[in-house]
Amino acid sequence: MRLLAAAGTGAALTLAFPPYDLWWVASLCVAALALLTRGATPRRGALLGLLAGLGFFVPLLHWSGVYVGPVPWLVLAAVQALYLVPLGAASALVQRLPAWPLWVAALWVGQEALRTRWPYGGFPWGRLAFSQADAPTLGLAAAGGAPLVTAAVALAGALLAAAVLALRGARPARGAAAGAGALAAVLAGLAVPVLQPAPADGPTVRVALVQGGVPRLGLDFNAQRQAVLRNHVDATRRLAADVRAGRVPAPDLVVWPENASDVDPFRDPSAAALISGAVDDVGVPVLVGTLVGAGPDHVENTGVVWTPGEGPGERYVKQHPVPFAEYIPLREVARVFSDDVDRVGRDMVAGDRTGVLQVGPATVADVICFETGYDGLVRDAVAGGGQVVVVQTNNATFGRTPQTEQQLVMTRLRAVEHARTGLVVATSGVSAVIAPDGAVLDRAEVFTAETLHAEVPLSSTLTLATRAGAWPELALTLAGLAALAAAAAPALPVLPALAARRARGRR
Image 1 (cartoon, rainbow, N blue to C red):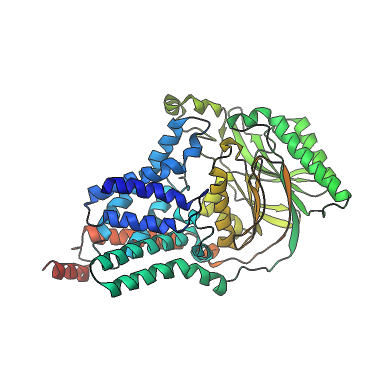
Image 2: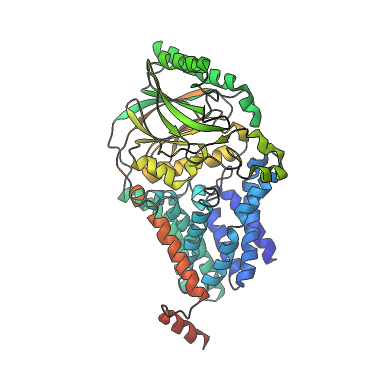
């Protein structure tokens, strides 16, 4: 029954994420896993963690196999589930310590820290923080980023588990205190905007986000590259016509999405002419998402600032291409599992510069697609001078699956984390304008052609989270590891007081 409950707990955790958005379920699932691993051996805790991981990641990531079949999806889900194996074992161990809810929360942060970095740069999907876009805990992002939000969610869950155990042991006062602590962990985020309000210390600019649309769903949308490019050119020319007719205010800059031009404008004169014509027509700089050749077998996913009368200028090259999607590590081995790896004919090359671009009057912190899930990439662009966060993305590959909404909530957290307006621009949707408090001000739905208009503030003030960088995550991870070491070896010389207390408890 405990094994079945672990798998069910993982499955229930998906309800905290889009499309369900039941954010409070996340803490309940942390509580359930803590109760399931309490009193278990580390080996049994590891098995419980694995089953919870499979129950969670298999349904959460089903979008990854919509167009390429079940094998890549299940392999990805299984690899992600493995990270909950040490978490389950460690949870069983640290619950032997005083103040164990703190250590359980720290271990959740450590698990996510590892999972988002290794291997191949990691994979951020399914972090507890990304289930909290509509929760009171979201405010904590401005103080300590996504790791602090995860810590609060996990701490609330562990304290709920402690409350259940206290009530079961006929200790109502202790149970009430643990329950109050869980509530305080959830509500703590409400205090952050009061103590550190989102700054509005700069001018405003008018932005137009062009979602030109794609001709078809799925992996083969790129087969009509010229059609995708012309969709965005035509949409920009319509914008220019509306400005001249007085139907919409003139923008200060325009943003196109990732893959708006999969035809390399630096090698195809006709593509360059189409882009230049649209940019000259609208009369303001356009941030163009395009693929640029980097040799016969490689390509760069690039954001290019295209200026009227001048053409292409500054560029940002995606620093974190997605393994097994934008480039294929160990191609011959991967081909054994799926022939679809050959759909990626040219491997994407990673850029080595932070995405800080001057687009007209705005200094833009540019990230591309999945990069919004990686703390350091967004933080570096903001700390480098970005006054507004732009996420150029292309989600046509994933159709109408929850992938699009799951990625959108990541940018909502980034907006709060850095007190910046977030601008998500997608070829096929969802494009959105996100306020510095995480609220979605406007959006264009999937598989529509639409241009969003917004007047957004520019800010140069850095939040505590931006200034602190990775230190909160490192501190929490080290705390979890120290607790794990104490639980596994309580007789270490450096912990004599704890060893003595445990000895008294045994007597």
